[in-house]
Length: 221
Ligand code: DX5
Ligand code: ZN
Image (cartoon, rainbow, N blue to C red; front, side, top):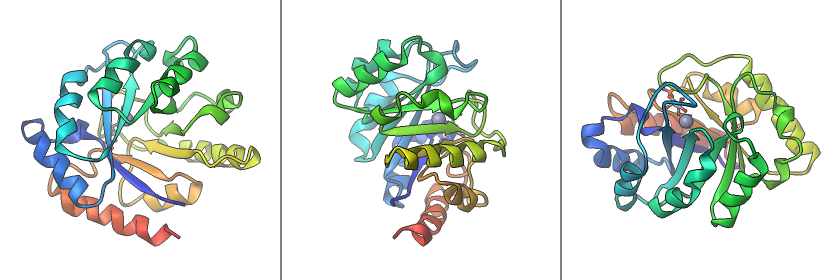
């Protein structure tokens, strides 16, 4: 099993974005989590295509785009052109989730589906075999710096069991309130890709990335 850290640039210093992205990649974070918010699915508006496109030449990191956007199928081609590698859509934002997942895969990208804390894991049962990643939201989406919601760990365990039952090795990502203090418990529940915004950016992003990497290495076999 592999374990990856995906720093979320939402918490980065936007005046030094390129440098900060290079810093976390240099310290071992192979993914970069890009939170796109539309002011409709979630209250905030974050950033979109121009920012993602301008970051693409700065790093070889996997661009993990988290679309907190109504009907994200409208933007699959644009995100591909900006350099997205993985597109994760919120199940609650898609009227035709199967169609959107197929659009992402037909574009040659990896497809993820995110579930809000109150959305049951079982809602993905039919579509699980088509996904590269499931994102269990561990906060309500929309803002960085929120507190981890404890019951979401049970959802991670339930998802891991469902994947095992179906013989699937789909990645399980968690996002929201993840830090070096709770990541071990989350790993033990079954997740393998960890989004962290405020726990990475701020003071000394490379030291904080290395701290996460040291923990993840304890679990790699
Ligand atoms: C929340 C976003 C997260 C956010 C995480 O809606 O999807 O990716 O940046 O921030 P932290 O790690 O600070 O909770
Ligand atoms: Zn996110």
